Length: 398
Image (cartoon, rainbow, N blue to C red; front, side):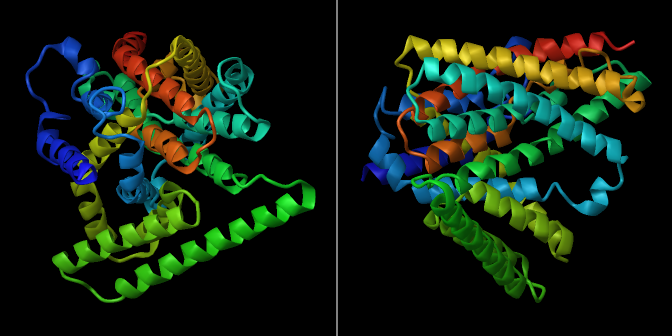
């Protein structure tokens, strides 16, 4: 009964109340830093979680795991649909490589920092430490576009160019780190040494590839003929459930396997426009549901968690700043960008939230909750800071 009550509440909150979020309602500007970005649903998740009302406890989360896998799968499909080759080729290749450069700089800075700092706060095995650092760095490297919609830069050519570049980078900079995050699921069953581990990893890779190819084949069969709108909705929803469930069954990432399916569909399916419209129609409720689940797993029970989150904030700030500086100063094409260009890339992305939730769902060693909690606290604080930082960046444009 508790599972059904929790399911009803989170779905009601996300699908009914989301019209108050991401909209241009007239509220004080200071509240934009939390409101209009969905972070209030993270707070709702905390209230529903085990530390407060207890409505969404560990057993309830386990019972709702099929729904959580579906959320990740839907987000993966949506992110994959951003990688249509014809659209990417409309931009100079330097745009793509600068997006990868920025995300990789942040990934390296945060990843190395977490490898050094995490053992002082949480007891890990070597494998758990590297997997945790990999997940945190992957989540931190992603950027959201939410704040860009709230910014009104000066109507100068340089400001418009910077805004366009920020939009491009924030939509595509997660691809490299998402692929790197997939390594965590490949090395997940580390229980043997040398050749035995290599054989196990090879078997898992083969299994994952086979599952992905099989799901793609099913998609192609279902989409071989033009379907009506209702039929197409049923096909996409059913295949999202199937692919996410299959990924969970083989202990792989629903986010990653559906990302590859999304990339394939957007480049090879004649129904790509209609499929994208179906996926995007419930993007916001899906994201808000994800935030509720993330809030439910947050544990505010240690001072060390606060300290770790502050370290993560500093590391991510350093990574984004260095990455933005590299774009602004090491490429003549982007000479119009200010040296603090990285200030415009501070918004914690929805993909980053999905990555850290996928990490919590897929790994169950001791310390996972602490890592996830640190990332969530860092994301909330970062959300409060990114708006003034972005305004400062635009003021620096000559």
